[in-house]
Picture 1 (cartoon, one colour):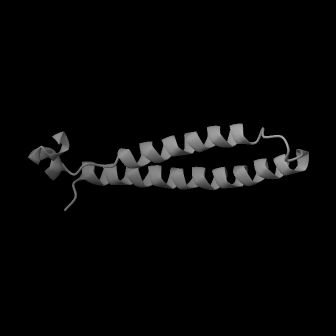
Picture 2 (tube, rainbow, N blue to C red):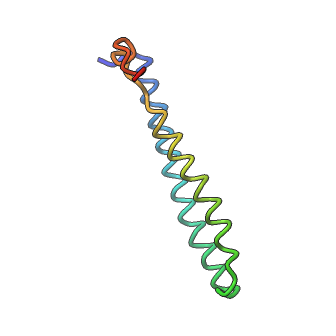
Length: 84
C-alpha cells in the first residue's frame, strides 16, 4: 500500500501532467493563431518560424521536466536502483 509521501508524490506528478496538457492545448491554439496571422500578412515572409520554434522549445522543456521528474517508489530507493 502506498504511504502518504508516495501518494503525495503521485498527486504532484498528476498535477504536473494536467498542467502540461493545458500548456499543450494553449500551444495548439497559439500555433493556429500565429499561423493564421502569418497567412493574413503574406506567407512570403518567414517571421512565423521564430515564435513557433521558441514556443516549441519551451513546450519540449516542459515535457522533459514533467516526465523526468517522475516519483521514485521507496522500494527502488532502498535497493539503490536509482544510482544506476
